[in-house]
View (spheres, rainbow, N blue to C red):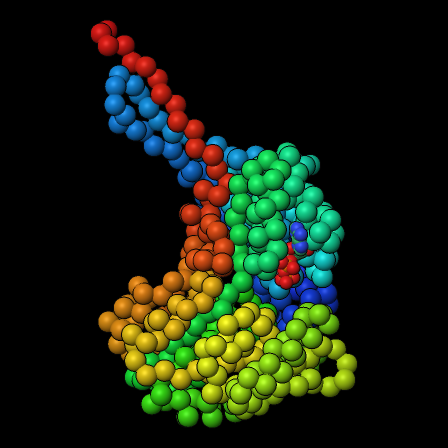
Length: 411
Ligand code: ADP
């Protein structure tokens, strides 16, 4: 695994180039993603010799202990938005626990994963340990989730397909399932926050990678005292984003992944206007080539609007007003999702009260996207099942065997 990490670092520019060419990701982000992929594998490599059972003080004359065993052949299905990172987050715990892997990349971004697979060969992985099967979801993906010899499936993607995977897994061999799905994550800006800092965090939290991030801060709740200033500054920042060729390092905003995704985002923008949100900036296509959507900011958004309830997966910021902490906690939790949440405040008591009350797998205080291979990541409610990253992710790939040895009553 460390050798593979070295090779990924060696070829990070090549991997980044492929990711930008096929996925439209800004090149510097794609390069960083390759480096992050190497770091993730190194983190999980450290777990290989630290997976232990317990000795159990069971009733009766028994010496009882547990062994953690690799679950077996695992299927993994990944999307296009962070293909390299999400692959490393799945390969890492599977390899560290001793499983073998059949991975299906997204149909939009197979090349960077095939390149990664070639590097596993160069690193000396035995044949058959890592298998990459490109293809479409309903065929290649469904073959993975329904296969009788695959005993676990790990999926990242939409909630709709996550439900299908679970159904197929149940109908085939009741394989174990872990799911990392959609989100509608709130970011709450309290009245004591520094406006400039909060605007920047919220801006990065929604516009990074053109909003194509499952845990994007897609509901920005701002205290009424700061609201007008916050909206004005958010608008200026969004308008200043440089849009263009993702290979140009001065560009901050690239295209959406494909036409379907572009159309879906435009439909949500239309519904925002129709339902009475105020369009501060953006709202239309940039240029006439490629699927570029201008960074879009809506103010006067209310909780019942579609843009505040459904996952847009695009560069659309919805700024919502609130008055009290009690009220914003209830409103932030009033969603089917529960992937991540954030709060910006100088008051640690308020920060921790909100952190405890929100139903989300990750809670960020005075920051957003504080993600890394060490920290468990996953969702409450329709955002998923199980955790990736951290020690918790290893359990997704392990069976626990209990061994009881009868001890003689008398020697
Ligand atoms: P996104 O909207 O992010 O593309 P999807 O959930 O559609 O998310 O796709 C994520 C991954 O799931 C992709 O690799 C896709 O090919 C795969 N997929 C789509 N449909 C199915 C399915 N019915 N069974 C298994 N995998 C699927």
